[in-house]
Length: 412
Image 1: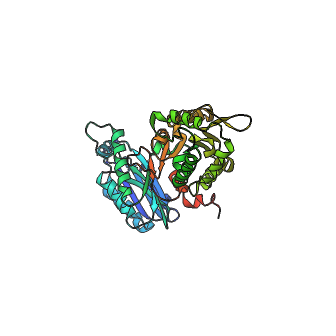
Image 2: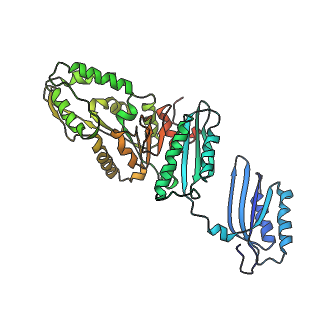
Image 3: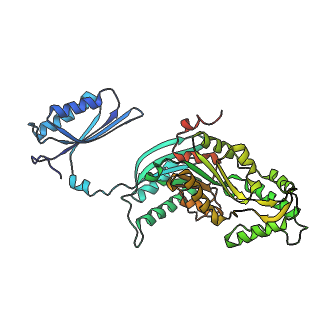
């Protein structure tokens, strides 16, 4: 128990109830009249509900302890608030660990029991929910929570950072069982103003089925060419595959290859998402380890700031020479491209939002301030959050922007 210099216990006063004008004035004036000094205060008012917490030193008061408590409790009838008074346990308070705040966004198709499932998950791990709010409701559900993991028990032979990541993986698995995506961010990083959104084109913007049809069309076109064409998208073979693909297309007019790009279709909402992000002031970058006809239309229509992909050298007649243009972009070099853009813009990684599917081709997203895996096929994704269902514009809800604010940017 903590006491004042005169040996009198410090008092905590908590009050909660419906809001009305003058509540803070009535409470603090009563404390002054009783000879008290306010050492700390926290007050909030939301949806017409008022709450206040104070730590008070009455060491200079001439009133007895009983008179103090009776007078303070008398505020109930005067204000309509529920008043709670206790002696301040300073020793216990000093033992409270520093808060580890995280912002958790749950989103997906609406259904009963989402909040119960998530809050039970936190309760079982001694994680305290400090604040919660609905961002969207209806057919699509989105809820944002600020949680404190400081009381969460540690794990043997595991760092605190690893324990938090293990908890995050379990939360992703839990949300998956109720068809919900979830994004978990350290609140310190969340508070950093984001400036750049980077998309891995093939894994987040292009529809998988249209990409498959596109590749089959190219294969059929080049089927009569010795050696055919190789579409390797993994590991250290990717560079060699790109070289061989360029060689296989030697002698073909570039327009014949570009004509196949009409097959490519973007995920619904891709243009809308880029447009909204641009109107909010974000810089947009597209990264692709495919050839530039993958992103030509996106670049021209959406007006993105940066777009990197591979190119084929052509002669003066528009015929493919069989050589790759420089630089050659593979999955491994995308992180270098991100570094280049950050240096050019003068921003830090904490200010970057990266969107991909979390696979090897978009593994660079794990190093961003906020990494989002959109409809990943693998289970063990290293990202801050997973959006397993719904529209790609749902990425916007991960930014902590309320639905009514987003509606300002969305065309009716």
